[in-house]
Image (cartoon, rainbow, N blue to C red):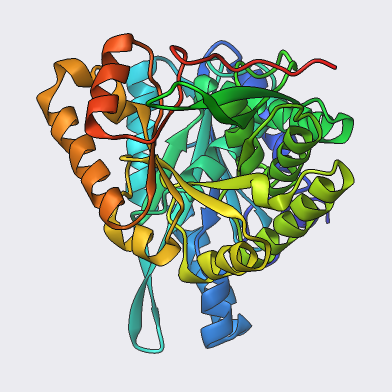
Length: 413
């Protein structure tokens, strides 16, 4: 009876209740050797059940279990943890060569197939491994690390057997992302975003035409705002953060002229929510929506549905539109024709050192000539030297922005 309680009825392997005890026994027998622990997950096994039924699915599990049993080694145990999840533990490895040989043996063994209703179907698997006395010296941590490695393997799934060993560097990086995700939540809830404003100047006269609202955070977890934005995007919190940055920029604006604010790429429904919030906040602080310029980053692709929503609000509220970061990644004329922006902002990568780079000179010149013929204003970003400003004046650019013209600063009451 005790033996039966230890065994998985379907496969004859150790079950989820007893495998830890069996692993501990192996460790006690050879505590000073290396051990290799593996979690094995059968990929897309649900599809086999859905296509052929659970009876055939059970036959596939039995077949896979028999494949495992072919690894004939007295220091190795096999177990079934759940439906299509298995485990392997081998102790007694004396050096790194034996660890490597074990990895190759396991991977080769798991490259198996099964014949179902006359069809030969490969059984693909994701395998995560960790090494006892190398990655960890206690069983629970070893199991946790193998589980983490298995999910790293599942992200690849590019072959019959995708096998990943635990990587401390990757693990630490993932833990940091998790902790930073918590910080994103804190920043949004506590509104730990503050705005600064960089002047946008007329190129010819040098007068301030308006300002771009830029966001900053004083939270020590993030070195800069882009790191915060990227983390928020990974945590599916970017829409909330974007709303907060927009609201803080509008509420904090005390300058004269137009205010430019940035909108991140998002779904059409989220764009509508952003627009309604922007209009509401502008009314509350008595800023005319006509004095707002919405900047769309051109580094990300925008769909026709997204642009239709934005253009609807432009038409209804006489909102200005600017195509930001022009000259990076997805630059194309079709985007200009679809959006019909009031302003094209040429990215600093095309402006920096323009007085010393003939290619940049002719590139910006072409932008300016195109814009003049289509009634679009050109704004050049990242102007840091007088020589750059002089060239841009000569080319007929309309507006400029950069440290030479003015650094981002906060307005004080």
